[in-house]
Amino acid sequence: MLSIRGAAAIVGIGQTEFSKDSGRSELQLCAEAVRAAIADAGLQPADVDGAVTFTIDPNDELNLMRSVGIRQMRWTSRTPFGGGGSSATIEHATAAVVSGAADVVVVYRAFNERSGRRFGQPMAGPLPPAMNWYLPYGLDTPAKAYSLWFQRYMHRYGVSNEDFGRYSVVARRHAATNPNAWYYERPITLADHQASRWIVEPILRLLDCCQESDGGVALIVTRADRAKDLRRPPVTIEAATQGNTIFGETIFNYYHDDISRFPEAEYTARQLWETAGIGPEDIDVAMIYENFSPVVFYQLESYGFCGPGEAKDFIADGNIDIGGKLPVNTNGGLLGEGYIHGMNNILEGVRQLRGDAANQVEGAELVLCSAGRSALVLGRG
Image 1 (cartoon, helix red, strand yellow):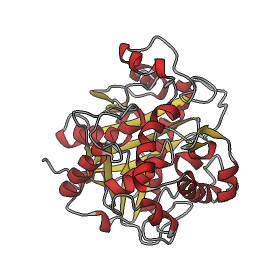
Image 2 (tube, helix red, strand yellow):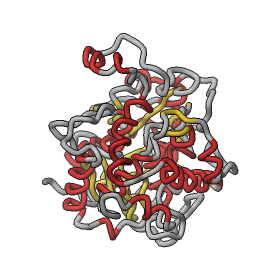
Image 3 (cartoon, rainbow, N blue to C red):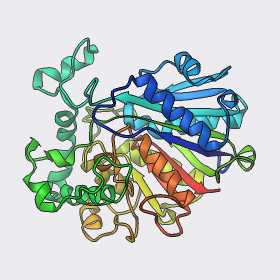
């Protein structure tokens, strides 16, 4: 496997506010975040010659160029899988700058997921033919689809919804002290979690579900040698990879022999640790994509922070809190800060390594940003 260790860096970050009704077009949100990221890096729009986003991002690259003032662009790419592809966007950008295909790449994601198309609502047509396997059984929302996967994990390891709630409480506690978070100054207790209404009984309650947010996020990636001359301390990309397997499925992940595990995340983890030359014991902060709270449990185990079925005790023992063995989602995550398909978690990773996060982890040197089937390790430049 090709090692890109330290060859590229994130040199700028930008975001809009995270809201439920932005009052602006998705293109405007995108342009605001991109301009903020370029300015944060101390660059000009004309310096950017590459762009990476998601296949499902509504913002056209050419429209973005005109809106921001990017004169010419020689690299564009998009990653699939929704939030599962969030870390892959940085992998794409890194490949571009390390290979010389581009010099400065902007990575962006912006949408009106609450005031516009609501991802958490029943799926509407036209839909791909494969949906005929699922819609007749009522699997028309992400919460319903994922719950069949989570239920097997709960059964095998004796995990309850209350166990999931302990993660939600930590996420909201971190959000409560993060001014960027939608749930700033609004922590919850475990009793609050258990009193929230069922979304899929007995698996997911309302407070196990990520937000539907309006907003935009952007990052600037360039070569490490150039990064040293820019405005902000560079955050190096120590490793970035993806993991897809023959029986994998993005939402309806029911086709593995053992669905109490997450084979894509396990495969991603093996590649990540090998290419970075480190292991889970070296990570200071973990930013873990969580559209639903159980996904954190799967990934803590898949990346080797604890053994199979041990995540509930790992969390209950305080390990993921600020000051714990492995602080997780120090911004409040997608449950507490906002849901921009996991990209805001990468911004938090950058802030931790710059030393200016709202909930700063003392001495953070390496941050894992995991989205299950894609992941990266960021380092202090």
